[in-house]
Length: 139
Length: 139
DNA sequence: ATGACAATGATACAATTAGTACAATATACA
DNA sequence: TGTATATTGTACTAATTGTATCATTGTCAT
Image (cartoon, rainbow over all chains, first blue to last red; front, side, top):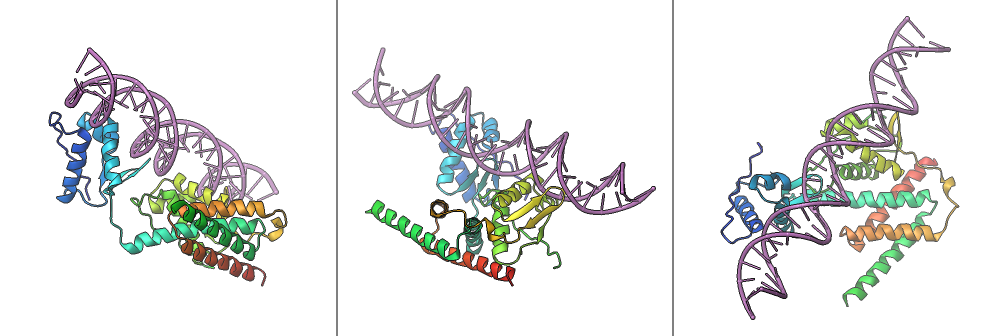
Protein backbone atom coordinates (compact mmCIF):
# COMPACT_ATOMS: atom_id res chain seq x y z
CA UNK A 1 0.00 0.00 0.00
CA UNK A 2 1.51 3.27 -1.10
CA UNK A 3 1.43 5.72 1.73
CA UNK A 4 -1.23 8.17 0.84
CA UNK A 5 -0.84 11.65 2.13
CA UNK A 6 -3.45 12.56 4.65
CA UNK A 7 -5.18 15.70 3.44
CA UNK A 8 -7.28 17.72 5.83
CA UNK A 9 -8.94 21.05 5.34
CA UNK A 10 -9.24 23.27 8.36
CA UNK A 11 -11.53 26.19 8.71
CA UNK A 12 -10.09 28.52 11.28
CA UNK A 13 -13.21 30.63 11.42
CA UNK A 14 -15.85 27.99 11.64
CA UNK A 15 -16.03 28.15 15.38
CA UNK A 16 -15.30 24.46 15.60
CA UNK A 17 -12.11 23.75 17.52
CA UNK A 18 -9.19 22.63 15.40
CA UNK A 19 -8.89 19.34 17.22
CA UNK A 20 -12.56 18.63 16.61
CA UNK A 21 -12.16 19.27 12.93
CA UNK A 22 -9.20 16.91 12.80
CA UNK A 23 -11.15 14.24 14.64
CA UNK A 24 -14.16 14.62 12.41
CA UNK A 25 -12.26 14.55 9.17
CA UNK A 26 -10.23 11.50 10.08
CA UNK A 27 -13.37 9.69 11.10
CA UNK A 28 -15.01 10.79 7.91
CA UNK A 29 -12.14 9.54 5.78
CA UNK A 30 -12.27 6.25 7.60
CA UNK A 31 -15.97 5.87 6.93
CA UNK A 32 -15.39 6.74 3.29
CA UNK A 33 -12.60 4.18 2.98
CA UNK A 34 -10.02 6.83 2.23
CA UNK A 35 -8.31 5.61 5.35
CA UNK A 36 -8.17 1.91 6.08
CA UNK A 37 -7.37 -0.18 9.11
CA UNK A 38 -3.63 -0.47 9.52
CA UNK A 39 -2.87 2.82 7.81
CA UNK A 40 -0.30 4.92 9.54
CA UNK A 41 -1.27 8.49 10.27
CA UNK A 42 1.26 11.32 10.06
CA UNK A 43 3.22 12.00 13.22
CA UNK A 44 1.74 14.63 15.44
CA UNK A 45 4.55 16.97 14.48
CA UNK A 46 4.34 16.34 10.75
CA UNK A 47 0.61 16.87 10.60
CA UNK A 48 0.88 19.89 12.86
CA UNK A 49 3.44 21.47 10.58
CA UNK A 50 1.34 20.85 7.53
CA UNK A 51 -1.76 22.29 9.16
CA UNK A 52 0.22 25.13 10.74
CA UNK A 53 -0.97 24.33 14.21
CA UNK A 54 0.74 23.31 17.40
CA UNK A 55 1.53 19.63 17.57
CA UNK A 56 -0.30 19.40 20.88
CA UNK A 57 -3.49 20.19 19.06
CA UNK A 58 -2.94 17.25 16.76
CA UNK A 59 -1.97 15.15 19.76
CA UNK A 60 -5.25 16.09 21.38
CA UNK A 61 -7.18 14.97 18.34
CA UNK A 62 -5.24 11.73 18.24
CA UNK A 63 -5.92 11.16 21.92
CA UNK A 64 -9.64 11.54 21.40
CA UNK A 65 -9.54 9.10 18.50
CA UNK A 66 -7.42 6.76 20.56
CA UNK A 67 -9.89 6.81 23.44
CA UNK A 68 -12.64 6.09 20.95
CA UNK A 69 -10.61 3.06 19.82
CA UNK A 70 -10.40 4.40 16.33
CA UNK A 71 -6.67 4.71 16.21
CA UNK A 72 -3.80 3.30 18.21
CA UNK A 73 -1.13 5.73 19.31
CA UNK A 74 2.18 4.28 20.32
CA UNK A 75 4.82 6.40 21.95
CA UNK A 76 8.04 6.20 20.03
CA UNK A 77 6.45 4.47 17.05
CA UNK A 78 3.57 6.40 15.56
CA UNK A 79 -0.19 6.16 15.25
CA UNK A 80 -2.25 3.76 13.21
CA UNK A 81 -5.83 3.23 12.24
CA UNK A 82 -6.95 0.36 14.39
CA UNK A 83 -7.19 -3.02 12.84
CA UNK A 84 -9.81 -5.27 14.17
CA UNK A 85 -7.58 -8.28 14.44
CA UNK A 86 -9.01 -11.69 13.78
CA UNK A 87 -9.96 -12.99 17.20
CA UNK A 88 -7.53 -15.85 16.96
CA UNK A 89 -4.65 -13.45 16.43
CA UNK A 90 -5.40 -11.18 19.34
CA UNK A 91 -6.05 -14.22 21.47
CA UNK A 92 -2.68 -15.57 20.45
CA UNK A 93 -0.97 -12.34 21.44
CA UNK A 94 -2.83 -12.36 24.72
CA UNK A 95 -1.88 -15.92 25.38
CA UNK A 96 1.75 -15.29 24.54
CA UNK A 97 1.87 -12.33 26.88
CA UNK A 98 0.62 -14.36 29.79
CA UNK A 99 2.84 -17.28 28.89
CA UNK A 100 5.89 -15.09 28.86
CA UNK A 101 5.02 -13.35 32.09
CA UNK A 102 4.29 -16.58 33.87
CA UNK A 103 7.38 -18.29 32.55
CA UNK A 104 9.58 -15.51 33.83
CA UNK A 105 7.95 -15.74 37.22
CA UNK A 106 8.20 -19.51 37.49
CA UNK A 107 11.76 -19.55 36.22
CA UNK A 108 12.79 -17.04 38.83
CA UNK A 109 10.97 -18.89 41.59
CA UNK A 110 12.66 -22.16 40.72
CA UNK A 111 15.99 -20.47 40.38
CA UNK A 112 15.54 -19.25 43.92
CA UNK A 113 15.04 -22.82 44.95
CA UNK A 114 11.35 -23.07 45.64
CA UNK A 115 9.47 -26.24 44.96
CA UNK A 116 6.61 -26.69 42.60
CA UNK A 117 4.34 -27.11 45.57
CA UNK A 118 5.52 -23.95 47.30
CA UNK A 119 5.07 -21.86 44.17
CA UNK A 120 1.68 -23.32 43.55
CA UNK A 121 0.53 -22.61 47.07
CA UNK A 122 1.84 -19.08 47.05
CA UNK A 123 0.10 -18.28 43.80
CA UNK A 124 -3.12 -19.70 45.11
CA UNK A 125 -2.87 -17.53 48.20
CA UNK A 126 -1.95 -14.45 46.25
CA UNK A 127 -4.85 -14.88 43.88
CA UNK A 128 -7.23 -15.28 46.76
CA UNK A 129 -5.83 -12.16 48.38
CA UNK A 130 -6.46 -10.25 45.20
CA UNK A 131 -9.96 -11.53 44.80
CA UNK A 132 -10.81 -10.51 48.35
CA UNK A 133 -9.40 -7.07 47.77
CA UNK A 134 -11.53 -6.73 44.66
CA UNK A 135 -14.62 -7.78 46.57
CA UNK A 136 -14.04 -5.20 49.25
CA UNK A 137 -13.30 -2.62 46.64
CA UNK A 138 -16.50 -3.15 44.72
CA UNK A 139 -18.92 -3.50 47.57
CA UNK B 1 19.45 -31.79 16.94
CA UNK B 2 19.16 -30.10 13.60
CA UNK B 3 19.04 -26.37 13.88
CA UNK B 4 15.47 -25.38 13.34
CA UNK B 5 14.85 -21.98 11.96
CA UNK B 6 13.31 -19.68 14.51
CA UNK B 7 10.13 -18.27 13.07
CA UNK B 8 8.56 -15.21 14.63
CA UNK B 9 5.60 -13.20 13.51
CA UNK B 10 5.65 -9.54 14.32
CA UNK B 11 2.65 -7.29 14.29
CA UNK B 12 3.86 -3.76 13.82
CA UNK B 13 0.53 -2.22 14.72
CA UNK B 14 -0.44 -4.29 17.71
CA UNK B 15 0.67 -1.69 20.21
CA UNK B 16 3.17 -4.09 21.72
CA UNK B 17 6.77 -2.99 21.23
CA UNK B 18 8.77 -5.14 18.83
CA UNK B 19 11.20 -6.20 21.52
CA UNK B 20 8.31 -7.32 23.72
CA UNK B 21 6.85 -9.39 20.93
CA UNK B 22 10.20 -11.08 20.38
CA UNK B 23 10.55 -11.80 24.08
CA UNK B 24 7.03 -13.17 24.35
CA UNK B 25 7.23 -15.40 21.34
CA UNK B 26 10.56 -16.91 22.26
CA UNK B 27 9.29 -17.70 25.73
CA UNK B 28 6.10 -19.07 24.29
CA UNK B 29 8.01 -21.36 21.96
CA UNK B 30 10.08 -22.52 24.89
CA UNK B 31 7.04 -23.43 26.92
CA UNK B 32 5.55 -25.17 23.93
CA UNK B 33 8.73 -27.17 23.41
CA UNK B 34 9.41 -25.65 20.02
CA UNK B 35 12.61 -24.40 21.56
CA UNK B 36 14.54 -26.53 24.00
CA UNK B 37 17.29 -25.90 26.52
CA UNK B 38 20.60 -25.72 24.74
CA UNK B 39 19.16 -24.54 21.43
CA UNK B 40 21.05 -21.76 19.79
CA UNK B 41 19.08 -18.70 18.80
CA UNK B 42 19.84 -16.71 15.67
CA UNK B 43 22.44 -13.99 16.04
CA UNK B 44 21.07 -10.58 16.78
CA UNK B 45 21.98 -9.45 13.29
CA UNK B 46 20.52 -12.46 11.52
CA UNK B 47 17.22 -12.29 13.32
CA UNK B 48 17.10 -8.54 12.87
CA UNK B 49 17.58 -8.87 9.15
CA UNK B 50 14.88 -11.47 8.87
CA UNK B 51 12.42 -9.41 10.88
CA UNK B 52 13.46 -6.19 9.15
CA UNK B 53 14.27 -4.42 12.37
CA UNK B 54 17.41 -2.90 13.80
CA UNK B 55 19.68 -5.44 15.45
CA UNK B 56 19.63 -3.44 18.64
CA UNK B 57 15.95 -4.18 18.94
CA UNK B 58 16.72 -7.88 18.90
CA UNK B 59 19.62 -7.31 21.27
CA UNK B 60 17.23 -5.62 23.65
CA UNK B 61 14.89 -8.59 23.57
CA UNK B 62 17.80 -10.95 24.16
CA UNK B 63 18.99 -8.84 27.05
CA UNK B 64 15.58 -9.04 28.72
CA UNK B 65 15.53 -12.80 28.30
CA UNK B 66 19.08 -12.98 29.56
CA UNK B 67 18.22 -11.01 32.67
CA UNK B 68 15.30 -13.35 33.27
CA UNK B 69 17.76 -16.24 32.98
CA UNK B 70 15.85 -17.70 30.09
CA UNK B 71 18.71 -17.49 27.65
CA UNK B 72 22.44 -17.04 27.90
CA UNK B 73 24.03 -14.48 25.65
CA UNK B 74 27.75 -14.71 25.15
CA UNK B 75 29.64 -12.04 23.35
CA UNK B 76 31.46 -13.49 20.38
CA UNK B 77 29.71 -16.85 20.64
CA UNK B 78 26.00 -16.46 20.32
CA UNK B 79 22.92 -16.94 22.43
CA UNK B 80 21.47 -20.12 23.75
CA UNK B 81 18.39 -21.27 25.57
CA UNK B 82 19.63 -21.78 29.08
CA UNK B 83 20.11 -25.26 30.45
CA UNK B 84 18.15 -26.07 33.55
CA UNK B 85 20.05 -24.29 36.29
CA UNK B 86 21.55 -26.50 38.94
CA UNK B 87 19.46 -26.29 42.09
CA UNK B 88 22.36 -25.35 44.33
CA UNK B 89 21.29 -21.76 44.37
CA UNK B 90 18.40 -23.12 46.37
CA UNK B 91 18.38 -23.42 50.11
CA UNK B 92 19.15 -19.76 50.51
CA UNK B 93 15.97 -18.02 51.04
CA UNK B 94 12.57 -17.92 52.43
CA UNK B 95 9.04 -16.89 51.97
CA UNK B 96 9.40 -13.15 51.91
CA UNK B 97 11.10 -13.26 48.56
CA UNK B 98 8.64 -15.71 47.11
CA UNK B 99 5.76 -13.65 48.43
CA UNK B 100 7.10 -10.49 46.91
CA UNK B 101 7.89 -12.22 43.64
CA UNK B 102 4.45 -13.78 43.45
CA UNK B 103 2.63 -10.60 44.24
CA UNK B 104 4.51 -8.70 41.60
CA UNK B 105 3.58 -11.39 39.13
CA UNK B 106 -0.08 -11.58 40.10
CA UNK B 107 -0.46 -7.82 40.18
CA UNK B 108 1.02 -7.49 36.72
CA UNK B 109 -1.13 -10.28 35.33
CA UNK B 110 -4.29 -8.63 36.62
CA UNK B 111 -3.16 -5.28 35.37
CA UNK B 112 -2.93 -6.81 31.92
CA UNK B 113 -6.51 -7.94 32.30
CA UNK B 114 -6.12 -11.64 32.86
CA UNK B 115 -8.59 -13.46 35.01
CA UNK B 116 -7.87 -15.41 38.14
CA UNK B 117 -8.67 -18.57 36.26
CA UNK B 118 -6.38 -17.78 33.37
CA UNK B 119 -3.48 -17.00 35.67
CA UNK B 120 -4.09 -20.12 37.67
CA UNK B 121 -4.17 -22.28 34.58
CA UNK B 122 -1.07 -20.77 33.11
CA UNK B 123 0.89 -21.24 36.31
CA UNK B 124 -0.16 -24.84 36.42
CA UNK B 125 1.05 -25.35 32.89
CA UNK B 126 4.29 -23.56 33.47
CA UNK B 127 5.03 -25.58 36.57
CA UNK B 128 4.44 -28.73 34.59
CA UNK B 129 6.88 -27.52 31.99
CA UNK B 130 9.51 -27.18 34.65
CA UNK B 131 8.83 -30.52 36.19
CA UNK B 132 9.18 -32.19 32.81
CA UNK B 133 12.41 -30.38 32.20
CA UNK B 134 13.75 -31.50 35.55
CA UNK B 135 12.77 -35.09 34.87
CA UNK B 136 14.61 -35.09 31.60
CA UNK B 137 17.55 -33.47 33.27
CA UNK B 138 17.85 -36.07 35.99
CA UNK B 139 17.28 -39.11 33.81
C1' DA C 1 -14.45 45.46 32.87
C1' DT C 2 -13.80 40.99 34.73
C1' DG C 3 -13.90 36.22 35.88
C1' DA C 4 -14.41 31.62 34.11
C1' DC C 5 -13.65 28.39 30.89
C1' DA C 6 -12.19 26.35 26.57
C1' DA C 7 -8.69 26.21 23.02
C1' DT C 8 -4.14 26.44 21.78
C1' DG C 9 0.88 26.92 22.49
C1' DA C 10 5.52 26.13 24.89
C1' DT C 11 8.46 23.21 27.17
C1' DA C 12 10.21 19.29 29.21
C1' DC C 13 9.83 14.38 29.33
C1' DA C 14 9.51 9.27 28.26
C1' DA C 15 9.43 5.20 25.15
C1' DT C 16 11.00 2.99 21.09
C1' DT C 17 14.09 2.21 17.59
C1' DA C 18 18.34 3.21 14.91
C1' DG C 19 23.48 4.40 14.29
C1' DT C 20 28.23 3.82 15.44
C1' DA C 21 32.07 2.22 17.63
C1' DC C 22 33.92 -1.37 20.39
C1' DA C 23 35.16 -5.83 22.93
C1' DA C 24 35.15 -10.81 23.26
C1' DT C 25 35.34 -14.98 20.95
C1' DA C 26 35.91 -18.09 17.14
C1' DT C 27 38.02 -19.33 12.81
C1' DA C 28 41.25 -19.57 9.00
C1' DC C 29 45.68 -20.06 7.61
C1' DA C 30 50.58 -19.47 7.42
C1' DT D 1 51.09 -22.38 17.35
C1' DG D 2 50.58 -17.61 16.41
C1' DT D 3 48.22 -14.03 14.28
C1' DA D 4 45.00 -11.77 11.23
C1' DT D 5 40.22 -11.62 10.21
C1' DA D 6 35.44 -12.47 10.75
C1' DT D 7 31.64 -13.03 13.78
C1' DT D 8 29.07 -12.02 17.72
C1' DG D 9 27.14 -9.42 21.50
C1' DT D 10 27.64 -4.66 24.17
C1' DA D 11 27.63 0.20 25.24
C1' DC D 12 26.64 4.54 24.32
C1' DT D 13 24.35 7.89 21.81
C1' DA D 14 21.08 10.00 18.65
C1' DA D 15 16.70 10.45 16.32
C1' DT D 16 11.86 9.99 16.21
C1' DT D 17 7.78 9.41 18.31
C1' DG D 18 3.84 10.39 21.64
C1' DT D 19 2.79 12.35 26.70
C1' DA D 20 2.24 15.46 30.57
C1' DT D 21 2.02 19.82 32.51
C1' DC D 22 1.52 24.36 32.70
C1' DA D 23 1.14 29.03 30.44
C1' DT D 24 -1.18 32.00 27.23
C1' DT D 25 -4.98 33.53 24.56
C1' DG D 26 -9.59 34.39 23.33
C1' DT D 27 -14.57 34.37 24.09
C1' DC D 28 -18.57 35.08 26.57
C1' DA D 29 -21.72 35.66 30.48
C1' DT D 30 -22.24 38.62 34.16
